[in-house]
Length: 353
Image 1 (tube, rainbow, N blue to C red):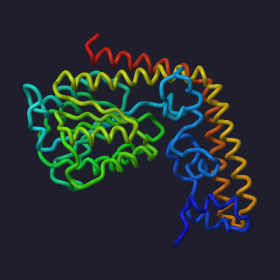
Image 2 (image 1 turned 90 degrees about the vertical axis):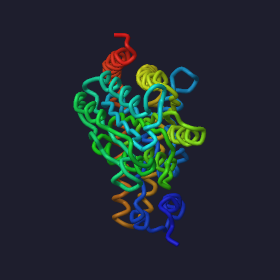
Image 3 (image 1 turned 60 degrees about the vertical axis):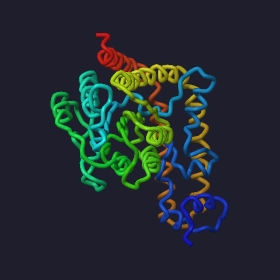
Image 4 (image 1 turned 180 degrees about the vertical axis):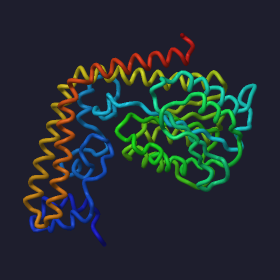
């Protein structure tokens, strides 16, 4: 049996005579599940958890700031939103005095009107047909928001097919392609559970571990207990938020919470920035440990390809570390502008202006 990349990485510095060509061929040092700038294999080899940004967690300890999972290099980057709407046949069912679909259209139009003009937005529907690829349709790719055109497309939707949630989630990384360095958000709206045999929990975990790494909001429309449990698990598995909607006011509240979380996100970041020196201390400690590991591994490599792979990884973490050191000088001003923008959007949506 061929050893896994992880096994090869773990043994690279333990077995002096190991041929590093095998290490190179296995393609290690690529995946970065916690998006902290240190590849998973390197974190494991140096005693860190590849699913936890330790430097960020330690610098936010003590309850002074909220829970921030975003790579600090993304703080000044744009925010993009991808809305995914269920158009399966059950969306014809009532929600209050109207159908689930009509309520969704109404609240989505209000949400679109409130979004900042500079925010990039995409829109996807699933349930057009049965369970194949043709059931999922990218109505509007992530890009500059044309409010009139998007609202017009939504107004024409009608309930039709099945509920391929896993298939749809599996396509999201493709929809965010080119925006991986930004702050991405996914809003999944469904009135039913997976009905096409897929595994939405696995799909959402894989999505969170991808470079797009969106923040996730899941909204359940008039769902039963079993559907609520699955949708809530999708949210929980992505460190996201689940909102249960039984009427139009609940739907408004769910989207208002999205805006409020964006505001809290920036306020928490302001707190983090005030402790940025602490963050840099922990990040530098991990950086130095990683550098030492890579240097040691290189001295035991007998293959030019393996040495090149290790050098590429070293260059990668060098760039990431330098960028984090430089970011301290520019974060505060960028965050202030974003806070003002999101506060205005929140007020617009909830009717305070």
